[in-house]
Length: 312
Image (cartoon, rainbow, N blue to C red; front, side, top):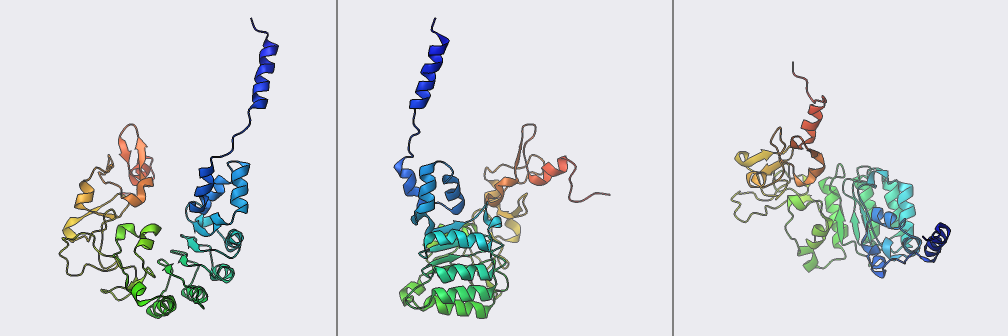
């Protein structure tokens, strides 16, 4: 029988000799494609990745802040993060960052005048005047802001849109200005789709209500509606496929959004109690129950006594 003391010393020797392996080189190549949250997570994996994230400028040239850290971002934190690009920031995408103000945005813009893509949808603490000042700075001289997303910022009027269009088009050729691909309702939150559409700005005048809104096209070629383009207030659309909805073809989801009949009949999980499906935007609403299959959030809360209305 082997001596326990020898076995213990042999095991300790093996542990001492085992050295942690360095990350695969491919991991360093993907850093520039990650958003801020993913970069912060990668920096905690090991010392090599931490140093790469902290010291390399490349991962910080295209800054994307979205869930789950967008609600925690302040002007001070934004300034600290953008300073890592050393004034060479190319893309600034702040998705639903409600605590970023005009002053915070302007400080970043003043130190990063090479930004070509500015995405600040639903940054509700930023005003139209703050957007105008930022765009004016970014369109000075030979620099060109090629893409702007501001849907969800309050009180943008036609005069604001006219001024923004004037600044954005100064440094673009007529051919570039005329490129206008369709925009579909169900793709509205996808940054890559917006960039492929080659649109300068995401807002325009709705041809039906004449308000400054996002205007969507119908993806169905057989659509026989006379007006196929309009904002979501003028033309209700399916949350999953983006097609126009008529009064006779609208089905409600458990989350309150609408689906067309075709999407409703697809094999989406339906609540075992109310028989309503989910839409793609609200998959987190579903609770998995081994007793009764899928339950929507409303029915799950009702089953525990938390009801929205009390019946008399």
